[in-house]
Image (cartoon, rainbow, N blue to C red):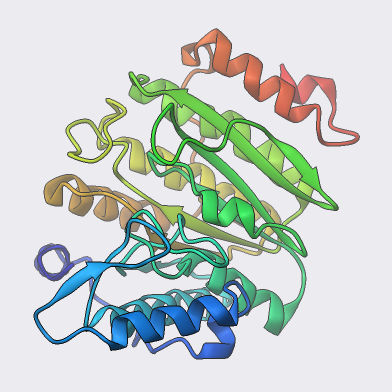
Length: 318
């Protein structure tokens, strides 16, 4: 994060920064159980400086500073959502990531679910509905698990790939879980962008969210050492364009990007720069990817997803 931040600053992309803060227990417990939080405090608190271990709930490596860092990451996500409530997009450059963390379990590098905690903070303060948009290479099993009560979730992700979830879409009361599995062998850059240009507007029209929280993971980029869908780094601009058009149409411009994965420093920096460029424009840039680029099986999955939304016009799915 220090390297990425320094490069963004050198490129003129950190002209305005906002202070982060630590997430309080009560804010974390809107998503995670008190028992899990106490487990994290106990196990991390027992570590001496310079030592590390895996959290007993799953594959999360922790050291003596992990609780403090995870609190700051979750609090930074909350601060981003609070600032973005005024209608100006905000990007939270935070780590560790969060979307694998379930209510009672840390896993997959994730201690606390930053995006979900920030979304719940918004709902507690303002009510309404939040849609979490997740384009990370990996499925956000933790976010899906805590959806409902005003929180919906839409994701593209490689399948089969860690954590092996995210194969079905369904309504959870008035909220939705929307999953579009992509072949782990990869998709073209145009197809990846076209999927989101086709999918997100219809999901948003059906759900009418008041806020978009984006789980912004860039490990889908070709060459990423942990992911790699074969997608070009330039996809970030197309993703931000459709997100900002959707936020302008349904959410009064309210969108906050929370960093998830992405482990190639060059690709991560370039992706964030492209999102900064795109969010600095007036929304309305026309879609640039052709729907014909979407492979037929994925197009069929999207059409099936549209069927879960009552009253969705058939024309929207074609």
